[in-house]
Each structure stands twice: as structure tokens, then as C-alpha cells.
Length: 140
Image (cartoon, rainbow, N blue to C red):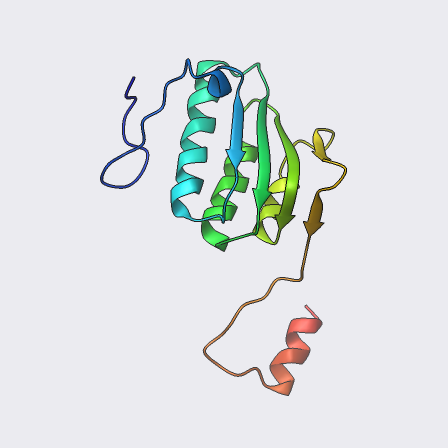
């Protein structure tokens, strides 16, 4: 069953009767980029419209990825009515760990041998920070 285009020129096809989707199981098993983010966002919204009383389960094994697609996924997890369980299997690093903590607060877990890596936000700017501007940043 083709339910429409979720991203890209070719779209994504998914069947709501597929065993994983009928059980509301979602998987993030790669680097977070706009393709997987848009696919998961579309599935979360579709499943929440289909039935907003049943929880969603997001299994994560991700080395991290891009900020904007990851934050879009995080925001969608906060937006949809069903609770989102987040389960780390393997690893949840960087943006993967951010998505892991986006699950409902009492419904987050990691498998016994999984590892979670959280780091300080990092970025680059076109201007070099001066001593004075660093002081302003630290004291805000």
C-alpha cells in the first residue's frame, strides 16, 4: 500500500499492516540525517493520527548525526499525543543520545551492553570569539 511521499523525489512506501508498524515499533539504526528523520516523523504523525492512545516504541542504535533533522525528530516526539518509549540497543551517541532522552521520562531504557555518549554542544562560527565576547557568553 502506498500512502504517499514522505521525502525525496521517489517517496517512501510503507504498509501499516507490516508487523513492526502494526505494533508501533520504529527504528533509528543509522546516522541521523534528513531522510531518516523525515521518515520517522511521518510515521510518528501517521501512527498518532491512526490511534493516539497507543504508545510508540523507538529503538535507537545511532552514532549521532545532523542537528536540525535530530531536533525536528525530538520536537515531533514531544508533539505527538502517544507516549514515545525510547530504547537504546547498541549505542546512542551525540544526537542519538539527545533523541533517546526525548522519550517519555518514565519510558526510556538502554539494553545492558548498550552505551550512551553525551557531549557538550559544539559548533563553529564565522567570527573568532574575543576575550570580551567569551565573558558575555559565560555570564548570560
